[in-house]
Picture 1 (cartoon, rainbow, N blue to C red):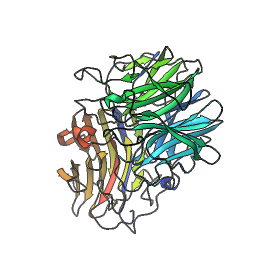
Picture 2: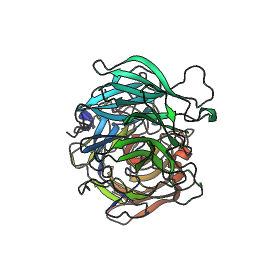
Picture 3: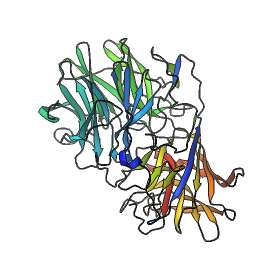
Picture 4: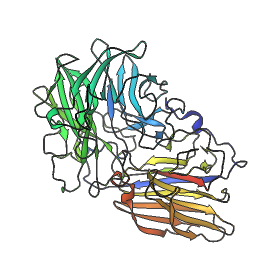
Length: 560
């Protein structure tokens, strides 16, 4: 069953008594980053382009399911289905009800961190951390990965990145990153812990023990050992965990033991995956590879999903950390994802599984159009934190949004009226058609491209007494007041209240354009710095999103 947000996607109630409204009749997207074209026997990396970090995968019979981090966006924890590990379709979001997890009113880089999906006896489990939430780590369950998922069972232990492992006897075990026993020896000193989970009570039981202290080579003071997963093959338990931080020093390590509590031996040829040993000046780099999870196919072959990034200049990438796939080769009962010094390939040989012909692409060249004609938005659309009132809806000739008194960049008192879709290319056209006739004085509506609350651009219409104005807004630091600064504007022709708005991204450069009354595109602002949308500039862990946005200049519009 395809699960949606529930009430949050219902038809919009009238806003006339409280505020104006903006109508968006369509959003269009076209992206193409070039690169080699795969043959019918090959696939393209990444398999999920754009802001889909921290992948976790599980096989259930002939089906594969994958979940990613979502941080402060709602709905959270996108869930994908595939029959071949390459072609993926989003079937839902594990956190899709405002009451499941209280994301609060925090920065977007907080919230739902690395999730892990597993399956046992027909039930699916996702373990996760709500970072900066009061209760931390939790597990949710579902009979169908498309949802609905249960409310959280809070687990009560310290740390992040929990992963649930089912042993051959059916016992359930949770590994996670946490503080080490005793004193920290250095700032990034962390440990990997193991404890049993009682499935009947969904509580942690028995001893809690450190499996790895610091990392594969403790004497080198490795940074932030994290993202652990356990699995079994033959006589060994295998523990895999990332270290080096989630940036360019990211690497994946492997350990093994004949007993679940260890001791665990680190592979002498670690890391099993990294790109940190390559020339930083190489063309078309893939960087920051790590946070991997292994999965065994029915034919006995093994594969790994992992995150990596594709910078377009230096360490600038606007699309966030993405999901990649590579085969695993076993060497003396150790799993190797990629030999030392080798680059993550842009194309590789497909798994020996049937191709999918009806799945829209999630990587490579793509183009799509959303007209908002259905009762619900597709599961890829997200808001900043969870809605608390009905400020948007579909089904009346498009998407209708009530402008919020809380613009992007503010937290206190309300929620921005913004619906985003993940940006999936560095070379892309982002387009929206907006009707501003329903706006009231002081209200704005248009298209935003958002890295985080302090770094974004927005093209927005505003109704004035004699005409409609189009302005380009930019926020380039937390020191600038929300909603940012209007850096370009134009008065539209008399009587015109609607426009097509477009951002054209070309790596580090961006252009803002508009078209009215059936005329061609006109440039409002050129040579904009798209690096403002990168994590290198804005900091944090997320990738850019884009979509409809509306706000009003102060006051109380009832949507907060």
